[in-house]
Image (cartoon, rainbow, N blue to C red; front, side, top):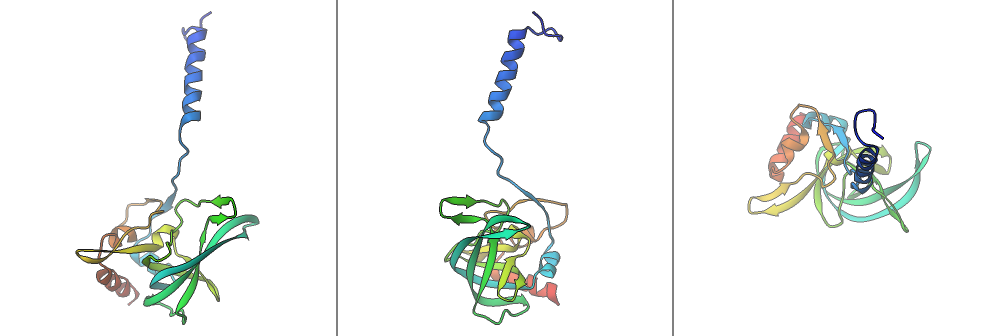
Length: 190
């Protein structure tokens, strides 16, 4: 018997089966997108911009928007206030979405990843009197590494795909020395 378009039934079913197998065997997508922010927008949306080192973290369940979610609270040792409001503390707690509680883990694509012992420049927004969030998720945290040029900012490992045509904060800061980056951020606040 022929399919209406002239293909034999067996060939048509084989074609459908192969397509379905391809869909089942494909890896899940692990990307997210976000509207790109300029450096001025990122600084403007932030309560403070800090250089600090993550010293401890703890994940727990909380309710967000009526649903139970895992969040990770990271203690960040504040080493330098770059711009904005002084948090008036040597350590602050920064909340990010996702984490692991017991045997359950949640990943939030595009969220900032703060690693224990790693220094970074972090743009934060005060959520309440004792809690901060990373402004614009992965766009708001820049791990600092050392190389022959000195201390250099990297983009966050969990940076989402950015949409928009403007010069982004990420493009402005990524690969730049810490001292140059500090000067750029401070110039925006003036």
